[in-house]
Image (cartoon, rainbow, N blue to C red; front, side, top):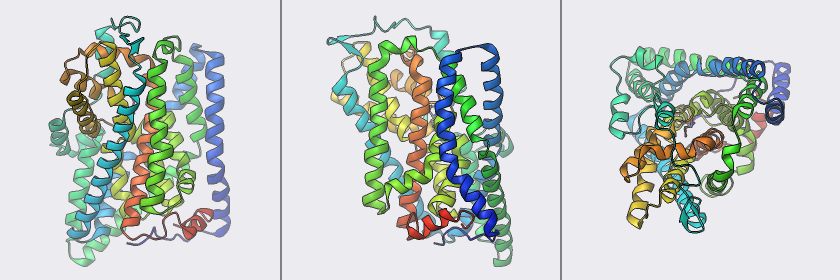
Length: 447
Ligand code: ASP
């Protein structure tokens, strides 16, 4: 498979972009810290919150506006580049295997931690009463409606849209991916000259979307500041106290996935440097963290893998849109820990078989969770219903959901980028994150 195509930009422009790209990590990180300080200092002052809301929404909209053309262009280009069915089958199988394995590792890590720490128990007793189990059902329902469905059959139905334009308008990513795969596959079977036209067109569209992403990301520090400052200013921290153990269990689990399991896979399965990978994906992780949306982060993930890691458009075009829709390491871990925590708080005895059921449900429902803020609450409600707990249980974790959403979304995106690198290496892309790729990174306008 080829690596990303080289571009012929003047060296001077490249140098300028290089400086900007490198500085972007720092700019976003500083914006994040400043947002935390300003948000805490100013609190929920209406004018401040309104200004942050405006700027943050503008930034989010600019990223979201790229999603539909980007998914179509990347999927179709990837399919056109893959050629025959055998290659597609192999790529699909590798991608799916990796998705399932990493999600399972993530969920099992969460399960182990939640059993060790038992955040839903105080002195061995169910902590439901202390945690205020009488959550308002209306509040819970309000939070989870419009968050998509955790039901796998519904997910399959959503994959085949009766109306493509309506699906695009509603942000049904799976439907776009499915259509993109079909379109690209049949376009690749056209007579050579016409297939080449299609390749040129969709490849060009993809390049344009990546270029616009680069431009939008110049405003990322401002957008990140606004999004995070608003969250800090409006999130009540008083309710976090009793949930601190739960909060920490989720965070530690996510950190283990970020700093132990996925780096081990990068090092020993892909044979690349985890530090280099982290370095080139920082902008995507910080964008995921501030937007709490894997879908909105998709353009940035593309940019990082293409320019930073040197993953080919065929692999990233196939793995990233799928990953940001169905591969959610962080979300699956969160679902498992949350369901176990709520069960502990209600005093429900969780047998080994029930725990295995929770693990399986967390893996399966995370596939159906949309890449938007708070989407996993629906899946948690599905798990609670299956193990016989009332829906109001979700109310227990609402106070900390917003902040944990930021963290788990970053891990979701990180898992996708790791998968793309691993699959690219299996596909024989030797240059990924190697010296030549880093040289390209230092000469950013080369593919
Ligand atoms: N916000 C997450 C994402 O976009 C989904 C979730 O766990 O709620 O990946």
